[in-house]
Amino acid sequence: MTTYDALPSGSTPPPRWARYVALGDSFTEGLWDVPAGTDACRGWADLLAGHLASRQHAAGAQPLAYANLAVRGRLLRPILREQVPAALTLEPDLVSLVGGGNDLLRPTGDPDRLARDLEAAVVRFRRAGADVLLATGVDTADSPLVRRTRSRVGVLNAHVWSIARRHGAVVVDLWGMRSLRDWRMWSDDRIHLTTEGHRRVAQAALAALGLDPDDPRWDEPLTALPAPPRVQQLREDAEWVHEHVVPWMTRRFQGRSSGDTRIAKRPELAPALDLPLVDVPTTE
Image (cartoon, rainbow, N blue to C red):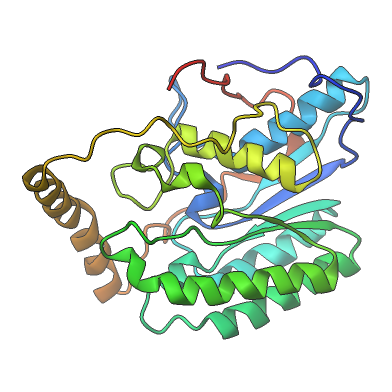
């Protein structure tokens, strides 16, 4: 891993933001991107902050300050209730707000209610003068169980685009990312991204913000692999259910969450220049 010290080719001006605050759940906390030699998750939002700060530094501008308030397992209403007021006190000029995925994993998750709550938060941030970065949900068509949420995710996605249009926000189109349809972008739990998945989402976020990605191939699919034998696929699916689905359902029945005892990993603004970035891969 490395920190980029030069601007991308071309005459793109440095990013204009001074204070970036990321809000959300495990996706924004960064599960399971854990750089070697650390015990903390990094993830796409950290990578985005590092890229923005590096470009500002290379241009001689004051580098970005960054806070990440995301906590794994959070539903959207707790995200909005706990993290939005905390973020507003930090006076950000850039906010990423991504949530609702945990809600839609539950049968009672209502995308219309989620959209109303999300829009109210976007309005608050826009009135405070912050630019807002939203994201769609990922297309779950290839997941044997999670694809049952696909129609509700699609409804929430439509709301996200409408909210962005009404209030001048921008959207990371995760649903449309071809590269995320590859299981090599996903960790063993099939819910959270790998390091490469987070890297590509950070590049997508740069593009959504109107900036040149560092990697022009950020959404190119990997070279396809041959389909595994049916028996192997069934065995892997059974292992996934045993190791990941059953513990998740057990926590739900017990009224617990993976984030119950956790706090935000980066609750205060701090310089983002030294955040560890990842090199653009040269091979697939």
